[in-house]
Length: 306
Image 1 (tube, helix red, strand yellow):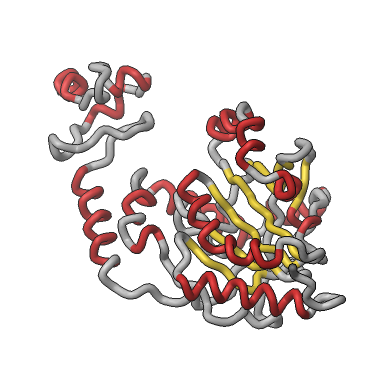
Image 2 (cartoon, rainbow, N blue to C red):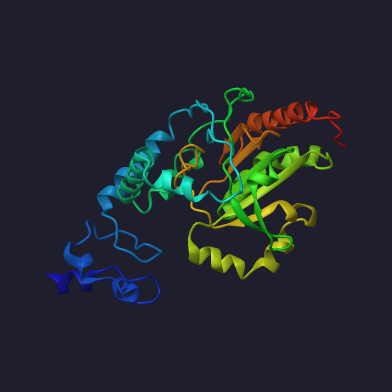
């Protein structure tokens, strides 16, 4: 039975090589045959997902695409002000023995283990991966939460930078991207605002190229010169390449899909005052320009855009 299934494992297109053999998978993976003969083999190595699961996720995404998207219903971010300083031994010790932290980590592990490999990919079929619409007004200052600290390598000089140090004292549009498509997502939001406020002394665009996969992050680091050629020189000092694990803040930040780009408007106090996901609707892009202008008006010297 075991030998029969291994021989019937789908072949990688164009290679004629057995996926299980190529990946060096343990034979335990072959104890149960996949459901369905027409399942497309995964592009990365691992046990194939049951076709029934993939079909149910795809059908759910298709059905969700027919329903209107809800507006963002709660402030995004973390409640504690971030810092770039490393936690002390006392703080680390307190976290190790914090029951709530342990339970949250356990919940995230279980959620990730029970989530299908192609879940995020199938979710793109629903509204292009957009799970919520941007608010029509800014989040109130007393309700807003902080943007978490994300460490990364600066594209301009390869120095290590933290958003906890970069965001305070500026009105910032922060774009989190993971792929070329997500870059287009965020650009659809910030393009008009960047064109209008680019020369303002208190405005900055912070782009975070987030690659939590170690191999992808390494490959990206090999092509920094090519990346610099694509990013304008005046934006390279605020362009970060990060490998930081975001599991603990993924839900508070509304990062529901790893293939989608997310855009945040962060005030000079480091708090998220507005946010957007996936491709921007026309009203969302206009709202971002208006909200950015309001925050800049409140800065010392008022608005000085070109």
